[in-house]
Length: 339
Image (cartoon, rainbow, N blue to C red; front, side, top):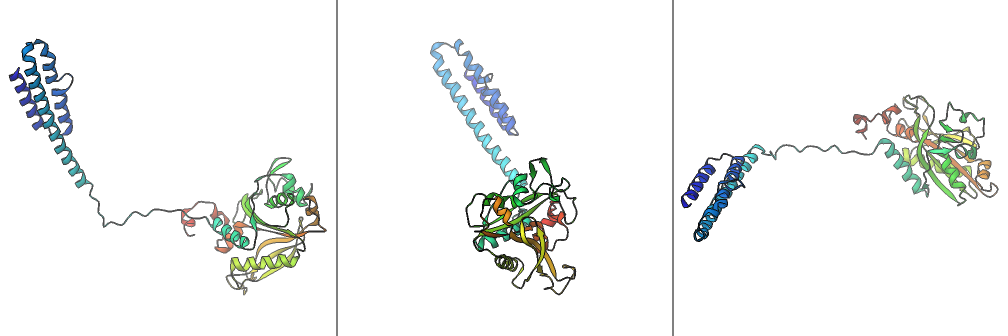
């Protein structure tokens, strides 16, 4: 038995020396120490050994196993070290190479313009209010003094879900919802997405954004409206900006006006940007119609107010001198990356 164990040990040592990789080394372990290995077979044959010899034979088997396991472990560690060294040589990192630049996202031009407008009005004591994009006809039209039969309610201009529900055409419904809560005074702006049945071109889209404002309080006059919008224009376009109010008509305001600002490119002398006029239209406004106040539960004898509305895209186009609205929605990283 001693000679047999000696042969197993010598044969195992020779195989370990000849093993060229970790897989071959594992094969030696299985062949010698596995369930069907040579040493395991010797242990299974212990029943044929005389009882008085079994302790000595068992000790020899254990010593042989321990020696083979020790040599196997040493050989494994050496091979793993060689493999790691080779991998490190193959994966050399050149620390002098420039780092890969991470492409970081940033705010969209619309978002930049919106945050600037919100900053200006919050600084004047306004709060920002949001409302649903799917709106009742009652709030989108009726409470804004736009009755049945008005051209604005034509299906050629408005997306109807059914006869009572529309995709809002303006953010003015937010104003009606706030007014009917009866918490006065009111100083608010309502930014958000709106929808109109327009063809897509350089200045139109079926989905765009508006920012509308509302003030309701006692003794509010057109002078308050003018002063507010003049201050807004100077904050947004520069301290030298001048404003001009032109008479207009809106169903929910009376009197109504459209507001122009002096061209911030040429200072009002006339250029390509302002088409030679020296002025650029930016928004519509007016004093809240008494009938609108009444329908929202506010006494027009006690309270007055003014409202205004502007297109967010128009502000962004003017501020950044963009000549095609479609560029804002095409997700072209070459364009958006400029902001």
